[in-house]
Image 1 (cartoon, rainbow, N blue to C red):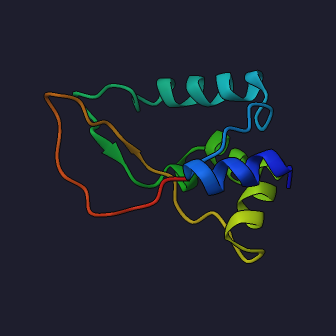
Image 2: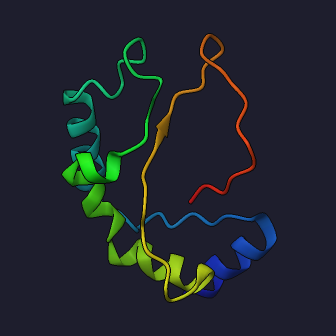
Image 3: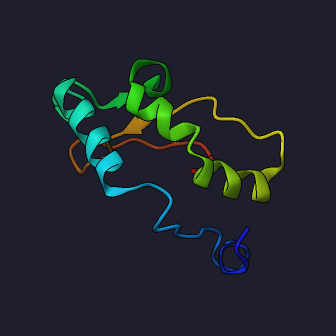
Length: 102
């Protein structure tokens, strides 16, 4: 892994890997989610099974650029299990137990 990612994670608790996912792939994700009402918050405040429901999400979950960084930080046995969207707005807010976002 690039030293700057390791240093950022150690110092800040996160790192930004700007080249991990190409813009066209991010646009594909947005398009697929939007076409399935994921962003219609009056319908969905949270969706817990994005990994199994959306091909663009399952594809990014095995993206070698992302997996490389995750495995370096968490360990070689790390695998994606779940992808979640939670919309917490002023009008739609609740507490969450401790958790780690990746």
